[in-house]
Amino acid sequence: MKNSVYKTSAATILMLGILSTNAVADDDDLQEMEAISKQFSLISFDEAKAKALAAKPGVVKDADLENRKFSKGWDYEFEIVDADGKEWDVVIDAKTGKVGSIKRDWF
Image (cartoon, rainbow, N blue to C red):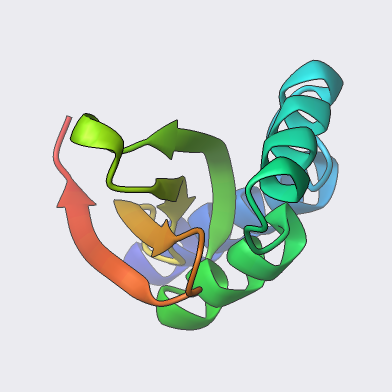
């Protein structure tokens, strides 16, 4: 029984990933992120997404480009669902491409 639950969960996550590959951010958000990244010489959304998924494999559920407090730069923030269905927040420094943090999202 557990095995079929795991298979069903894995299949669901896979299908959500396939169906929502381009639905990570709506077109306006993605265009705004790309414009900001060009204006401030940041890494692209696609580069940041690849780095986030390399750090925590799974399916990207949501993504944002956030200005850090006190003008300390920009971060890409990704919500990623792993194969077990757990949600993670992955922060990528938008200037350097370094992983800033990986934290389990409990809520």
